[in-house]
Image 1 (cartoon, rainbow over the protein chains, first blue to last red):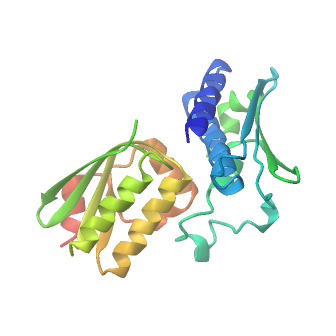
Image 2 (tube, rainbow over the protein chains, first blue to last red):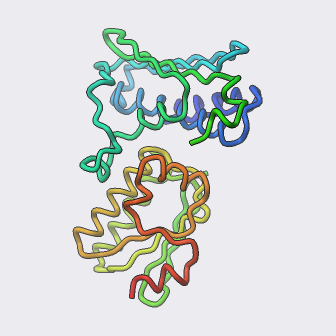
Image 3 (spheres, one colour):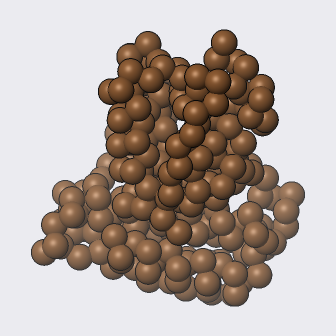
Length: 134
Length: 114
């Protein structure tokens, strides 16, 4: 889990340096952490032989975070809706939902093997509070 | 900051004062073990004081839900006290705010178990 903490710290620093307000910075950091946890736990299944990679970029327009794993792959279309009444009391299945809730764009790409998850936060939107209400 | 858990008894209610983060690898397992320990001892009224929990992730949410269902299955009751804004926001977003009994002040929370 050290790698997850490292990814989280870098995301928090980048979001702070981009001038995001405290709430948005928290949301972005949480989304990136969830993506990293997902890669290590569900993607690589804690296999030390498999790697999680993370890249971070402030393009001036967007914050872009890319997390990859070397697991079996993830089909986002098959994920159950965690807000459905029958799923509310499930112990798992909220990570991708939180990522999608907190970021402006979320893209999945199958790597065979593995999954690449790209999270995007538009800086113009993020710095306009009316565009970032929960 | 990892999760710290302190236990105290108030009018027949076991209050767990939580402080720190409830996340995968940093507190979710501690919370699970603490609650299972209480339930296994036959304690029926559990109040989680979340006033000093500044972060919860999806794993932590899962642990809260598991604790809630474990308690319910054992005819015990688990309620939440003093959510911080960040935790409250996440519980609302995931609709778990509607699942738990949540209180802002301890006296009301304790009274609700009677």
